Length: 556
Figure 1 (tube, rainbow, N blue to C red):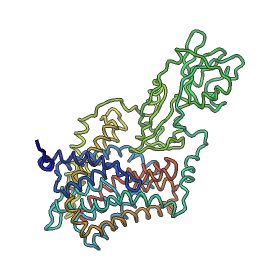
Figure 2 (figure 1 turned 90 degrees about the horizontal axis):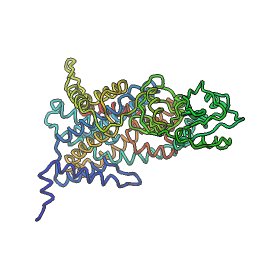
Figure 3 (figure 1 turned 120 degrees about the vertical axis):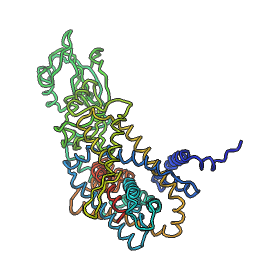
Figure 4 (figure 1 turned 45 degrees about the horizontal axis):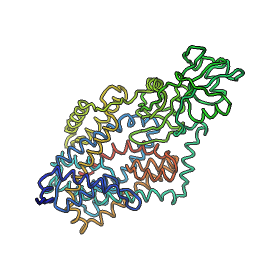
């Protein structure tokens, strides 16, 4: 039996899309000039190749994909978007705005000067800044407002122009930006390692958190003549500068409850201690005898993800939580808007931050009541809230406000983004509202974007070849300008006017450019995760700002 693969694919749109996605993920694992292409680039390139081969994509599949994606962008931004204003967010918002306005201005000037076709400017903006939300916002605006397009142009033609410009400028937006970001510190003689140390050394070195120092439970006997006899646990901590937690004390035949401030240590006590390896090593160096007590060792160590909600800790440094001393708990990771932040005592917490905390199970629950809430260990997503959110987001996008001859509409992308932000923000206040496990959100986000990108590639593939022979090289050169100039403007403003720490500034610029690959390069150069603080701040604003700018640029 013969199977004609070409005919088989031609007759099945769904099969084509998933074939493109599968091959795109495989292609995304390869590296170009030491830079991994990534699954989004891989799917786009594969889609373009299939499009050039004669295949096309279904716009309804693309619409479904971008609906999921842009809504999940809002869910991810949610609490951090509002909290960022209280934590030096004005500077991050300003940098994101500078990058966006500079890039939009360049796109308008270049499109006008070289007489690019309608839609090319928005595609150039999205590709040069590697901003998929910009592309989503632009395409959504075209589909929702076809009547505002110039006479003689169809929505499909403008979308093709958008896709072509995006495809031709996207690869340099990734690879070129990474290389440019890598050499900015060289050009300006910046020591990123030293700049990062200025942040991490803002607090005493002994207070910085060692994320590899995992807690252990051990039991010790208090011998006659010990200097700890008659002292409370708090006094011992203050005198030794060792931060541990006593889980229980056996006194005679009984196990007594422990209060850090009032319980005093007596001769012969068997003390159960949860502490880091460093603290246990200290006990060994002081010849405090370790003993075996099955009941006092019977504590379960667990790892949980806690979302910061309590206003008492928002805007405070991690060390103010005093988790090791009060709760025997240790922070392994901090995630803000999907970005891993440095685990350091001086890191300032924001509402919605997620802390990966390890410690004794009951004490982790106690910590969650103090800080916020434990992300539930569930394998379900609240589909009711999800579907209602999508519905209200799409409905909000259909509303049009008229001021004389001027009509203003958020469009589907804007409506979905704002409703996603609102739902996520409400959930940060009421954790029982809407269950969106991070893994489920990431799957929806990734699935949505690859569906969208596969369709963009399939529908733009045939025209990309034509463009490469005509206006393609010029579009690519313009894309280089739009990638590099906003970075330089933002860097100069941040360095000389805002006087920002340059490790954080470089991270903030990569966030404003929505380039995770560039952030990785900056962190490697700084030998620190400090730049991620800047990235998380500006990335949240950039996604929102660029979504709306993409929609506006289509009609300018």
